[in-house]
Amino acid sequence: MTEPGSSSTCSSRDSIGSVNEDSNPKKKPTRSLMFGYLFSVVSALCMALSGICLKLAAGAETTQMVVLTSIIQFLYLIPLITYKKINVLGPNLKTVGFLTIRGVAGSVSIIFFAMSIQHLPVGTVTSIAYIYPALVGLFAWVCLREKCSVVRGVLTVLTFIGLLFVSEPPFIFGGEPVDHKGTSNTRVLGVIYAISCAVLAAISIIITRKLGSGIHFSHLLMYSTVEGFIIVLLQLYLSGKSIVPCRQHLLTLSLSAVFMNVGHIFLTLALQRERAGPVTSVNTSQLVFVFILEYLVFGVVPTTYGFVGASLILVCAVVQSLESTVKNSIRKCN
Image (cartoon, rainbow, N blue to C red):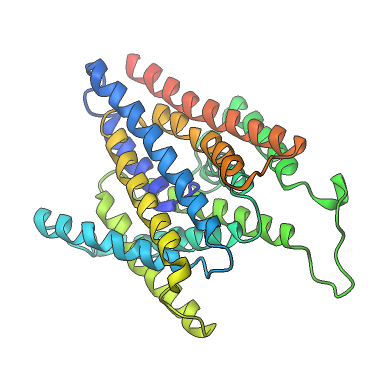
């Protein structure tokens, strides 16, 4: 989901990765690295399956999946926090505000992801969600005053060109215009939700960078879980919809939540064995899995424009991840 995912995934990736890159930079067993890559691929497959299961629940209130995801996260976070004796509010009161904002951004990002799947193919949503690395670089340049290299600038431009191809706006590529009532078609709505998901995921990562590596990943997950649970409950209550899925959709929504959480766990395991850059690059295989699974399950074939755009976004995400890794390696050598 965020990240696109799940924004908690992205955030954990960033914070855990920053810790891993500082530890044992010279000696890492080859077997451990291979397991890191393997776990990253398994995580990507689980995330792809989560999106497919969510799409199978056609006609369901997909945000109910967020409730199920939160419940599952509670089940393994509470024992962890109890065993580690972690203060759930954070290491100090100064971080509470940032953690709260990050939790809202991350949880709403997941909600937008779920809503976008109601209007677009899973492959299209996943492709748009992967513009978040470019947005992170852009926001870091504006908000954190981080340097933006020429390579990163070019990759950001190419990413947005890829986004243009994936979204296929009617005023450029043709297609169904806005209807006589003035309401936009479902594709435009889905694209807006997916872009909002990517923007909020990028914001959550920027806040995680601001907080630094001193924040335990359980704080990030706990805030996202609690706030996401509350937001979705309010949304379902105000819209008059049931909090519990009907029997017809309970299985697919539960499987979607389970696959998402398993994806989070395997991504964390991957980041404990390899740096964030290579893990992120391998994790982009989620896009490949999504296209294959969507074709096998729904018979959906991406358009030529969509395929070109998705490929462009995928390549840019991989290059940006590897660029960061190369820079960190050169910095350590010097």
